[in-house]
Length: 145
Image (cartoon, rainbow, N blue to C red; front, side, top):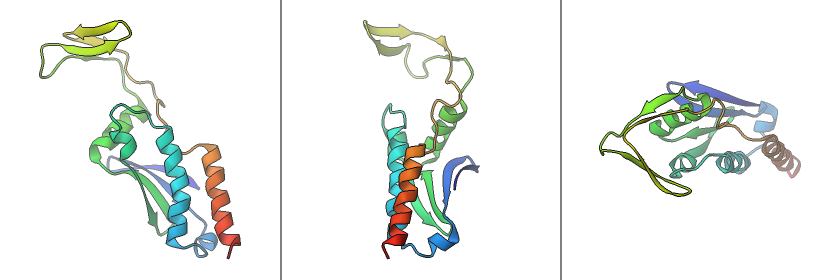
């Protein structure tokens, strides 16, 4: 069972494996199975600088495993991408103007209104195919013994 949890400003996914199956698995096997989910989440993560994608981690827990973001700043960015933002005004903090590349060259602005990010822009969760691959890997480890 996969559950997205928000706790103390942190976004994480708890992967709960039934105890009957969990007892038959080694920590290395759980890590390998969790890698399937992490790879899928990273593949579907939007990339600007790559810091958000690079901060996705996994660890074994008593109930199975957990997938989380390892930096507080990345949790803040993740919340904006998951929950979205309202339309708001942006202005430069350090320079005289904002600058960015467009299809026809550079654009500049001393401040302007942006639409915001739509809710659900990024889903911090694995796809159904990754979940199926995860479960088949767990079943493979259990039947291989």
